[in-house]
Length: 430
Image (cartoon, rainbow, N blue to C red):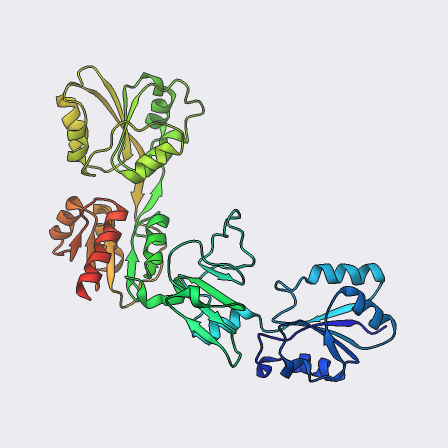
């Protein structure tokens, strides 16, 4: 028995039919085609008729005919292929699959966009007959075979992709009629993204949040970590502090690394009675992931701001500050002056990485998020060639000590703040 050939007819343009598909149609003795397959394709065989159900395929194959099941686009994408294959399997009828050009790629080609992008289109989701109750997959690019985008953002609708009546809608998508494909995501309009084309060097050791935000705004992110987080030279003080955590009235965290280093050593948090202060929103979020309440977050995300946010009278209060080995003493000194009993323990060290990425010769921006990133960058790469973005006044002061003047300084001393500052500067320049 000759296998039934599930054959992709492509999006509609006969020129997009594969050579193998055309040969199969012309040699077939029975062709069963989808309603959306244009006559210019199914008429290549004088034995064509509309497809109704798998019984047609089974009967024709069992009678000894060479059978083609001609499907619009690609049979493996929203072609109800599984149901047909299962019916043929039960009847003992063999089959093969000849792929075709699917509507998603045809629509992208028609609109002159790419479904993928090296930073903004790393993942693609194909969505059919979208039910609002079913969440759309998290992907950089979402292609809707049926339905409409549920979120605002760049999108293109392509009606009758590759056919003579093709229409492309870049603004009012509601005008597109079936059959149409909607491509949603940054790739639909890259040039509308505020940081598109900007090459930005990120120097943080752990900067996934910052990188994600920059890429979402269109930037080409160059990861060049200049600090490496390693355990303290002597972990004993940190271990002792973790073991006696219930004795403290306050825990003060000045970085996400301090949160991780301390709580990785704590198995049971039920004895914790301390109030918690974090220097910024990222550190606050790290604490809250542990289901702990953060009591104080200063308005200004620097040591001086943290001190100002704490009570004026701390007499007899026990305070633990797990932090980097090398750090300013502004906070512990000020708290001791208020009568607090402050334990400062080394939670981690920042060192120059043994190995780092290659820095390109040209880039638009380099971001500095601490004094350590400034010093280590200069040690590894020398003076920066791009515009300088500083996270705050302490980092800016270090830059100036080395003869460097930042182009911008974040108003909010956080990675989100530095991204916002770069975006503002680029928009202003344009």
